[in-house]
Image (cartoon, rainbow, N blue to C red; front, side, top):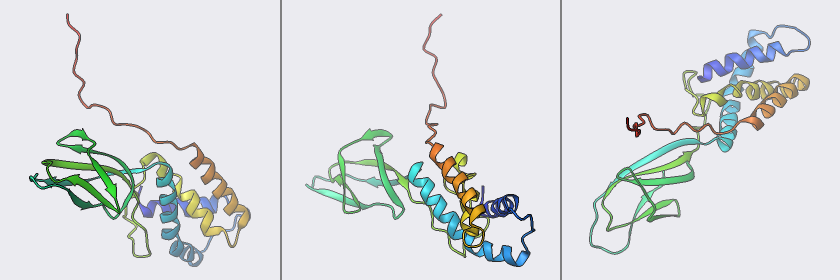
Length: 190
């Protein structure tokens, strides 16, 4: 789902749950649309706190005979550490310190640091074509939050209904694990 689709669905929810049944004017929708990027950003951040957005950071190191550690700056979107691989095997001989990954200088190989990331902050300049970063199964929650927050000042009853639906759905969300082998080798014999 992209940001434009979130806005369209939020406007639809706002109209659907409206108590008075009066259609929202284009001018009023424009006012709502100006605030929706910020609300979508807040919802995406909140969802990513519950169901992390996985990412990875690659770097290569050529070992030396020197003592000590090489420092690699953590990615700017770093939120939470998962694990690190060295040449596609789990590697545990490193540490995190002051927004850096420290690896002994004697180790050689290709490293992949896995982590949960913060989503990009959405601004007024973010295009409607921006694809949401949270898991697909959580993206349908965002229009409820956006619609509820957009209406909060002028129609608290509808806003509360939409926000209650959002928080109710958010409480049932959990991480879906799909890290399974693509090819499974048969081990039985005839």
